[in-house]
Amino acid sequence: MLHPCQRRAVMSVLLMPVLMAAACLVAPQVLAQPGAVQEDTLTIDEPAAGAPATVAAVSVSSYQKLLDDVGYLGGLVEMPQASQMVEGMIAMFTQGQGLVGLDKDRPWGLLVQSSGQDFSPLVCLPINDLEGLLALGVNAGITTDDMGDGVKSVSAQGQTYYIKSSGEWAYAAQRADQLAYLPESPADMLGELVNQYDIGVKLMAQNVPPMFKQIAVGQLRQGMQEGLDRRPDETDAQFEARSKLAEANIENIEQLINDLDQAVIGISINPDGGGLMIDFRGTAVAGTKLADQLAIYQASGTKLAGFLAEDASLSFATAYSIPADVLPRVVEEYERQMATARTALTQMLEEADLPNDEVRETLNSALEDVLACAEAMVKSGEVDMVGNIQLKMGGASAIAGLRTPEPEKIDAALKKVAALAEGDPNFPGINWAAETHEGVTLHTLSVPVDDPQAQDVLGGQVNVAVGIGPDAAYFWLGPDGVAALKQAITNSASGTKDVKPVQMSMSLAQVMEFAAAVAEASGEDAAAPQMLAQLLKDADSSQINVTVDGEPNGMRYRVKVDEGVLKAIGKTGAEMQRAQMQ
Image (cartoon, rainbow, N blue to C red; front, side, top):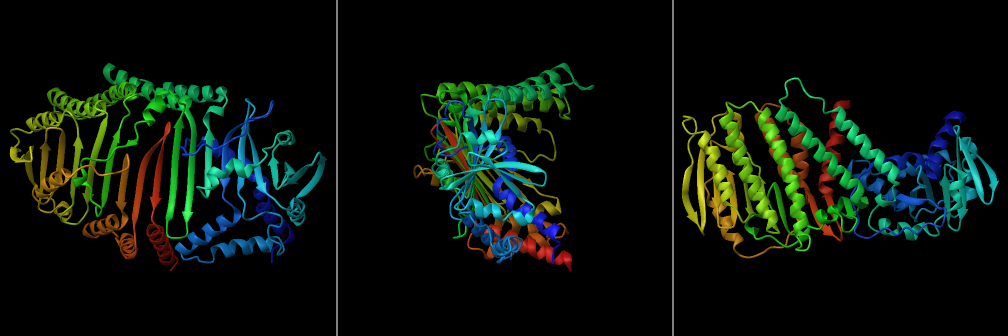
């Protein structure tokens, strides 16, 4: 049995978060999240004269949904009674009453407001009996006082908060004056978050007071200056390159701070077999540079469908059209970014331990060709790159293709790098124009693998092929010949295939099976990856998918984790914990 003082302390911990603590704990975290944004616009009523502006909003779908999620996740980690345990604890410390007065089926909300000088959290709770809920705190040492005008002060553990009931809602704040302006319907205001996510966080960046934006940028610049002290062994060119790169990074962050309109992070847990979904969504102020950058994510389909593989260990596709009306501004920004990239690459080569300046200049020229190839692709307004990796012992392979108006730049870069190896007796040499397939010239290279551990992964020999076509470049690496690359080129001629502007997929079952085999071959402890690999192999699905979609003035970045992955990770963790305890 707990001592009465212990019981009161635990009761305070249970009840005060429900009423107020979210305001203190969540608000700083909300403001620290850059996020990214939701498709629908969260409706925030225009503030009355003198009322604070809403800077951020946090939604929780409902108390009952959270309990369901706890039960679902508990079942995945072999704790099927997790939700009942939570309710049992609440019942024990409320003397069997539970959270009386709290509507368990309606959403909770937190609004972070600002009058221009500070930030103030306002908690919105669905209440059908505020007096009953507050009465639970008597045994926990929580005291309430009537302040008049419907406002009550609530004190516990040396902290005082203020609560006011209005309709079917109760509002909790850190100051009584915050309750002078209350939203008419939090459910309507938070509905667009609640309808899509179990937990949602939204930042209205344009409502952040300019003073705080200026402070943020100022601190970034101060930090940059403090980190830009010249190093003792740094040349003038290296110091200048590093300074330009740091300044470019600050400008990008400053642009994000000023141009961002709204940002959302949303989490959904689906107990009906859908696993876990996390969204990062962002929108920019219309007409800004950031809006132009985000506008490029318009689906157009890929003409490299032959390089897609549903059974791959890892796969990716990037295919989108840049709208003609924003293409000039996008190209201008891309050129600025490429200038930053060139500065960074130049710095990297300057610092690299290379034999001589001739090698450094040759590599720099080859990298310039690759950047020029990418720049030509962007200027064309069509971005299209697809590839996949197959992980298996003794035969790991990779294949990729990209469409570009200047594929010959890849050819030029390859020849420059190959020239550096001429005369090296260990270099097997490249078979230039070894084959031609459907208008694509194939250069091939065969490299023997001598290291035993590398042979376990790659086999005794790795074949490399680079294909240069009239409007595309292709790549292949694997133990077999170029047959797979030629087949992918042939299959790509069948037409355009719909894909997301950006999509990536990983079969965790294949990845962990490969990791377990590598660990075992190298003599390392493979127990955990082997267990996880077997559990994933038995699951209906073990995919982790990442997609990017374009939205008006913005984009959505979505991560989906299959239920089989969550279950396997949970069970592996439980088994490893039991093993450690034994």
